[in-house]
Image (cartoon, rainbow over all chains, first blue to last red):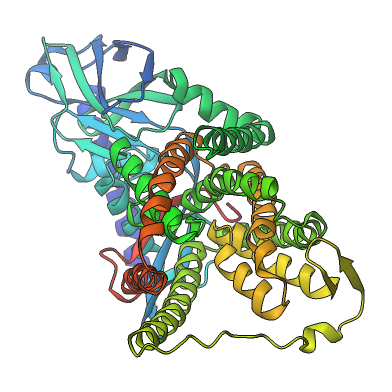
Amino acid sequence: MLKQLALLSMFIIAPAGVSLAQLPLGEASSAQEGLDIGVSSNEIAITSDFRGADLTVFGAITNADDLLLAIGQYDIIVTLEGPRDYATVRRKERVLGIWINTESMTFEQVPESYSIASTRQLDDETQLTALDNIGVGIEHLPLNPTGYIRDVGQLSEFREAYRRLKLSGGLYQKETSGVRFVSSSLFRASLRLPANVPDGVHIVRAYLFKGGTQVTQREIPLRVVKTGLEQAITDAAHDRPLAYGAFCVLIAMLTGWGASLVFRKD
Amino acid sequence: MNIFIILGMGAAVGFLSGMFGVGGGFLITPLLIFYNIPPVVAVATGANQVVASSVSGAITHFRRGTLDMKLGTILLIGGLVGATVGVWIFSWLRSIGQLDLFISLLYVVLLSTIGVLMLQESVRAMRKAKLNQPLPLKRPGQHNWVHRLPLKMRFKKSKIYLSAIPVVMLGFFIGILTSIMGVGGGFIMVPAMIYLLRIPTNVVVGTSLFQIIFVTAYTTMVQAATNYSVDIVLAFILMVAGVIGAQYGVRVGQKLRGEQLRALLALLVLAVGIRLAIGLFIRPEDLYSVAVGGIGY
């Protein structure tokens, strides 16, 4: 009896829920909104005195509904995602008085750096669910552990520690008012690249939300390259490690030999 | 990273190494770690720096004829095998996240042991000197268990007849220390050669330097190839500052008295060891840490 009642109520509630969610979407617009973005430069050079940089992303909403624009129903999120790699989080514990790494967890393919800017603080329920689904935002990035996990209960602790450490280290950044409308449908986003930004191909992504639901997204690549001597050394160390090692030894031998010549006591 | 701090560090350690006649690798690596250089880089770069500081010393000994090539080569064979095993241990410790801890622990044990032994010895010597007693010359007995081992070889330059086994073993042990700690290992090798192997003192330093050059050079290559952790810019600054500092150190060292000098070095070694030990016992600011890369990196 009770089961039947529950089942019945689900049928009544379900269609109502769907129509409610569709309400802000369906009625107002006839054409689908679009998004265009451009970046001030598509390559960032890291010199030896690099202290971080600001990246400006310009964009426009096309086919926007004027009324929805006016009442601020559109939200823009712009992210800058660094190259992806595995990340290992370790936790120390006191063993015989000494602090030792005991537990560890490895997350698969997470961005090494991540910067996010949005039009406002994203906090309503539908929006948060949407962000979770597409994995956008520092709190919503999927952190999937790999390998053997001793204790699943610790998963959330390790995820929280990862986010905290990345934020405090400056590699992950968020600016809840980093996107500003410069005219009714034109916007400008500023993203911060930290001084220790990893080199490689980064991706700028812009997402358009209407009333908490994602409408469309755009992405463009951004290359971060080390220049000059720094790059030459880093490249050599990684691409030709043996030759690089031999070079290091040669330099050392020459320095030592040179010193014995210069300071020779005869 | 401030270039002047690195220069100063290199010059100071070079000065001390010239003054006390030590390689300085066992001071450079902990100093780099104190300066927040990752231990992985500090160790590999330290090994590279030791190549430079030992080359100039070895050249001098070669000219004077105080270098036993044959003995050095046998030490070197053990050293190369040891360094290979050491780099393997190093990479494995790194993959399980225990490398930093292990390096610190090794340094604490080694530095405090050597510091205490040196301090005891020099204080005893100073006391004797004050009482105006002649220092009893330690005459090592002609034979010990080492000399009963098989595979004996004749080393002409050193004028000894010695089994190759303990020589290879010593080289092997020092090789492991070189690759894990970024040191030449002279501060262990020299006493071991004198007191354990009974090798005449005049060839000991030159011969150990010969072994150190090639083992540290080999370690630099292998570290560069497996861990990409040799920083040539950092190493070069340290080298240049080090060799210059050493020249002044030698001059000052000649004016000071031996016992006092050794007591000073002992105190310095102890201080570095204690500073590292404190780091192991105090609660870290954050119990968690993040490293790029997955299992096995």
